[in-house]
Length: 425
Image (tube, rainbow, N blue to C red):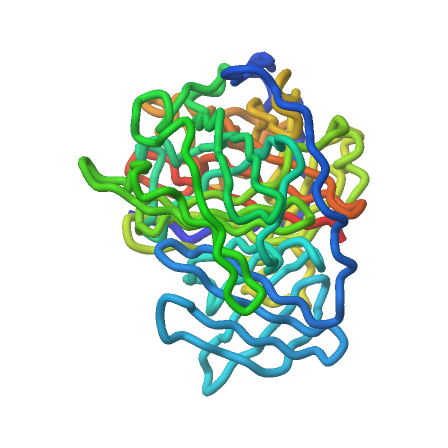
């Protein structure tokens, strides 16, 4: 049985009772940290910006013109296309509808990346980066990323992609067409008690190093891994052939080309420390996406800002009924916690707190160590879940990819994977 989500717009959630789990600092390091190497100068955002990203299996292309207020998108692996006028409402691009069918919405950080929802609320999101030609890397550059689930919805028992994140080091030839990936490591958060375990790479599902080539088509560079490098495809014995897209702003996306392992979204590791106090100064627009059972997904626009309790947490929620003219909710709290000691920009002890209106979290927590039921200072039931945030500051604005579990939506005693894609306004 799957329950309808109930929004709580009336009050901010208190974190006094929620954040009782130990805030242990866990360093998910493997090998030594590589110094950041210079990228080419980031492009100045133009009026029309083209993005590319994965909705595994397959990439999508999106173009938005913020002056003419028009958009177009296309599924590069299929036939889905849409174009027309758009409205920027409360920081979210609304593509409207055609013949009663929603064409979708998007949020962008101009010149860097975007999140596209190519349809209504039951559409799987597409995490995107600005299109770029092959990008040469000087020296070695470390990247950090959040793991994306494929469009087959996943719950808390779905393995490495549940709350996955990772890192790799990239170097290239002077023309950016021959690349080397090294020190590739993937992790998954497994418990509210803090910490992460290795996944995919150390157990042989993915290689820890491999070579790749970049080919340019109409000015868009696509990086393809060496076919001899075996990547996991989500099922026993199957192999994926990932493709990557990089840009000069430091953003990266990976398409795993399977419907279980959805790839990666991330950026070059920040060269300066990311602090929760700095992140909390911003206001954010974006989307959350949650698998609400084995066959459906819910993707809705959200707004976040600094919590009203004086902490450095972010408080926010969805726009009711997908209506961007309405006041967004305050049903979700994101607490970044302590940063990883080795990989700047990764927060492996983050917390997600949601109002548990239906009182389901306690039952879920019996068999799921990632969630915990408790009460806020007003006696309301809340559900706290382990999470991981991958954060960077690009062109002076923060981008947050946050992954956690939601124990408030199912009567089948399991949590559902929930992800937030947030862009500072």
